[in-house]
Amino acid sequence: MYSRIACLVICCVAAVGCGGVSDAPKTVDVTGIVTYNGTPMANLSVGFVPEKGMLASGITDAEGRFELTTAEPGDGATPGTYQVAINFVPEQTPEMPGFPGSEKTPKSPIPTRYADVTTSGLTATVETDASKNDFKFELTD
Image (cartoon, rainbow, N blue to C red; front, side, top):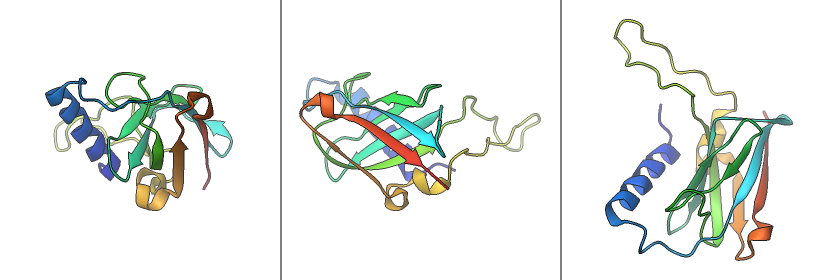
């Protein structure tokens, strides 16, 4: 099942691919860490969704760290207020259902409410001073 954030990421990637980055807004570096019940979590998509403007997203590494991208890898996000969604991204894409050898999609290690900005309860304000843009999202049950 694809969440709303996955659709937004796909649309933004398609828009950037079509229009290039010459019209991209000014961004600042944004980094952070995601933990679940105190444990850093890998393979999570972190999406910063603005009220208007471009989505910024990143994937957590083995230490739960992420860096956001808007138009170019690691370019950060535009300053402003965001709703945040965090979604599990399996390391392997499962085969198509109904075909021999197909796998089930791995279960998300975090509660699914975090995958949607309307239910995650997570927000972030990106400042023009990049030193203030290191976020910690502590997810719980």
